[in-house]
Structure formats: structure tokens, C-alpha cells
Image: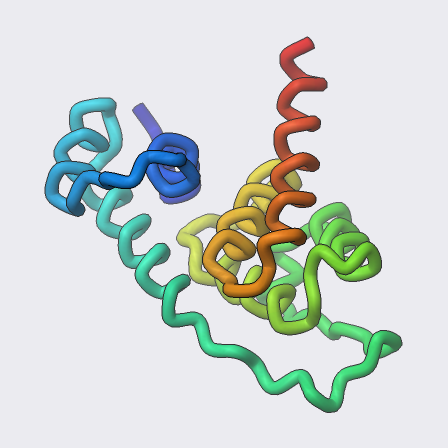
Length: 157
């Protein structure tokens, strides 16, 4: 089974992080379950590192940025985020799901993944995970959750 870090993150998010359950399994229990369902230990470790880094993501100094500022992507970011992904991030900013701080965190989290390119569906999940961990972004999270799950329903039907 060729799984990557994003697959592990999605599994964790769908089954443990964004659930109503008050008791969550500890890291060791999660690691055992992830291995049991077929994820490799290296990918599991990378996913946990990625999540741990998420919780301590620093707020970027965007106080001098305006609504009309332009985000210039680095060469590495352009390679990882195609035109559709960059356009989607811009759309999310325009509808105020993302602000400049959360956009930068999303880009930083994308760059932290060990993958060559992120497709649009994966980007949506990353945005959802970032918003989940950002205090005061509950409305944006709910809006993004609706977008992600509406897209899933459209694919299923």
C-alpha cells in the first residue's frame, strides 16, 4: 500500500480529530491502529510531526498587509501549488474563509508536506485542518467543512 502523509492526516482527521468523542486515544494507540490499517511507520511519524507543528504555528506579522495586497509565491511554492490551488486560496481569502495569517499557515503547512504537488482536494483538507486548529476561526471552519463535504457528496452521487 503506497500511502503518503496526507492520507494518514486525512484518516486521523476524519476518524479522531474532528469528532464529537470526548475521549481520544493516546498517540501509541493511534500509531498501532494506523499500522494495523496499513500505514507505514515513517509516514505515521511524519503525520504526527506535521500535526504537532500545526499546533505551534506562529502568527505571521501581516499588520501592514491590506485587502488589496498581492501574495507573491516563491519558486518552490509555485512548484507545489498549481494555478488551481493558488486560485482557490485567493477565492477563500476573498470570501473571508482565510485571512492573510491563515493563508500563510496553510502555505507553510503545504510546504511542510513531503510531496511534490498538492491537488485541489488535498488542499481543501489542509485548509480545513488549519482552520480547525486556529482559535476564533470556527465560522470559517464550518464554512470550509461545508465546501469539502459538498464536494464529496457531488463525487459520490
